[in-house]
Each structure stands twice: as C-alpha cells, then as structure tokens.
Amino acid sequence: FMWSNCIHKITYCRSWLMLLAFISGCSAYIIVFFNIPDKAVFGNTYDHATIESSKGLAVLCSFLLGLGDSLLNTQNFSILAVLHPDSSSQTTAIYMLSKAMCVSLSFFCSSHLGLHILLPTLMSAALLSALAFCSVDRTAVKLQSERRRASVDLTPKH
Image (cartoon, rainbow, N blue to C red; front, side):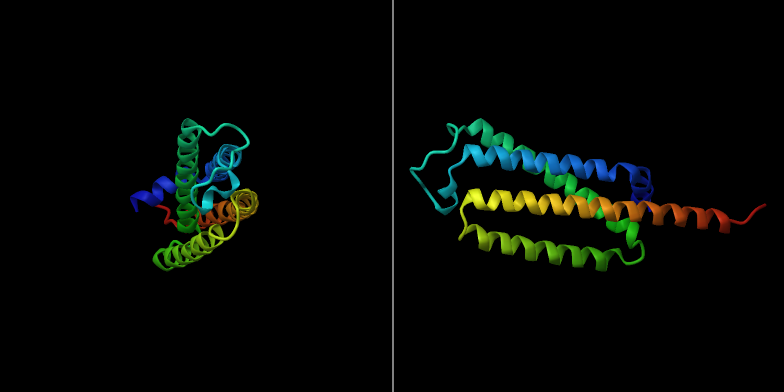
C-alpha cells in the first residue's frame, strides 16, 4: 500500500525516465562501439578499436549501462503495478520469464556475432522498447486517471 501511493505520484514522469534510460544505454553502446574491438566478444584479440581503448571509458559505459538498467527496471515494475494492481505477482513472473528468455537469446547471439553487429541490434531493440513503453504508459495514465475518477465518484458523502 505504501509503495502504491509513491507510484501514483511519479505517474507522469515514467516516460521521461524511460527516455533517460534509453539515452543512457545508447550512449554506452556508442562508446563501447568505438572503444572495444569487434572481435573482443570472442576472447583476447590483437585487433584495434576505432579509438585507443580506455579503461576510463569502459568504466563510464558500465555506469551508464547500470543507470539505464536500474531506470528501466524501476519504470517497468511501476507500470506493471498500475496496469495489474490485483495480479502483480503473476504479472511480475511473466515479465521476469520473458526477460530471462531475452537475456538467454542475447547470450547465445553474443557467442556467434561480432560486437559491431550486436550493438546496433541492441540499440534498435532499445528504441522499439522505449517507443512501446511510451505508448503503453499513455494508456496506463488514462487508465489510472479513470480509476481515480471512479473511486472519487464512489466515495460516500457525509
């Protein structure tokens, strides 16, 4: 109950936070694209990156990926709580299953495709995901405001 009140207060900034997560992730992907050689995913390599590889840039990328991932998870769980308030455990289980399947597919692909193919693919998927999230968020905001109006109309008047 306490968390649901907090979630209601941040309803209108979910899309903006998702946009920040998208920008953070894509920035990291672009930096990794230039900072790490294409064949680095397969093990040690003598190939050179587009720019001189830097540990500082790699740490910055890990920070940006962590920031984007935490924002993404927070907003996904927030919207799930709004859309399915009565069945949150089932909804969360389905979300976690689909996420695990996507991560498994990603790990499989990463052992067969070079980094310079994986990163644009991830950026495309991130763009589609962000657009889909914003579309669903618009629906969730409408649904939430309708629920509030309905609960206000049903409250007893003294």
